[in-house]
Amino acid sequence: MFSFEALKADHGDALLVHYGPEDAPRMLIVDGGPPGVFGHALLPRLEQIASFKGERPISARLAMVSHIDDDHITGINDLLSHLEQDSDPVVDIEGLWHNSFDDSIRTAELSMLADLGGVSNSVAASLSLDHFIHDIAAGVAAGKELRNLGERLGLVINAGAEFVAPTGRRFVSEGDRINLGHACTMRVLNPSRDRLLGLQRKWDGVANRLRDLSVAERRRVLARIVDDSLANISSIVVHLKRQGKTMLLTGDARGDHVMDGLSRAGLAPSGKTHVDILKVPHHGSDRNVSTDFFRKVTADHYVFSGDRRGTGSNPDRATIQMVTEVRGRDPYTMHFTTFDSTVEGWLEEDQRNNSRRYEYVFPDPAEHGIWIDLQEELWF
Image (cartoon, rainbow, N blue to C red; front, side, top):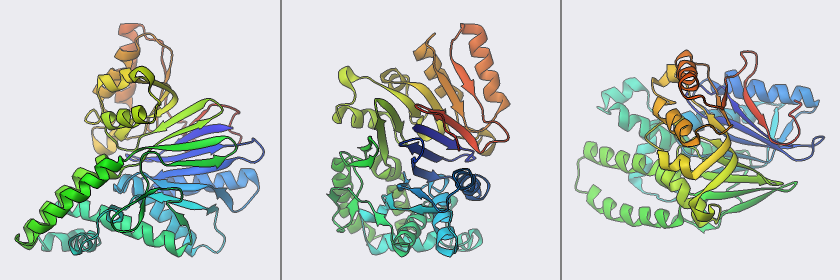
């Protein structure tokens, strides 16, 4: 079995990967979506799996958070909080992969930013914190909370990570591999260790300048640095393989950074690669990808996890057009985690005007998301 699920995670990501023998499959949980998704999608789906399999708790080999944006991390924090309080937990998680920003940098200023992330919107307004700074601060705080929850639950954190940051903590980075068992392997393509070291050098210079700034200016500079670093530095991108089938999970990473990671891993001979499943970066935002990216990374299945009704943007029409123009009349499938009549209209128009051969899938209203079977069919 090698199956992929993308849950109805509103404008975020909440993914499940199932692998192994059909009668005893293992599971990965990758991201948990924004506030609310744990309650209406992730927990109900885990409960459904437990019911179908007739076992409780079900086993998860690993939970992974790609980065600290709230539309990825919140649902995992909610899950771990639930497990901490529940006397009859639905899932037993063995390990946690997560790059908290302060795994690479630890200063009093960063702790201050995490503290600011915990305040309410009204308190933030009274402190003259703009929404941007408060949102970034909230991400840093969520990362700190996740680390603490994982430690209290006794999870093995960042097992297999080789890079040790200046803080002494292990940081998941390119080249790390984990043998998940049952012939399934996961390889990390990003973040780059060189970029991590560059971030530390950059931070050393900035930290000296912060001392001469006002408190408000310090918060603003700090937030900008954290924001610039999330997708480019800390975000985890992984390539999964089982018996010749492949998945590429990209979080919110930039397409050129994904390509760099693929090339350095030897997974893009002649500068190109093909995977069975591509989780399209950043919910299909055209800011993270280019036509060149989709020319170099092709797939049988493209997964767009997003909700235009919630964000007003993702997936972007331009991103969908990049895929359809590059692939021409090739057969493939595009999957969307939220039904949107506007997106459906774009696809119908494209197929009508260009005689395309691709298919597109929206989730069944009765299901918790979409799924793709690369080997045996998912039975639970």
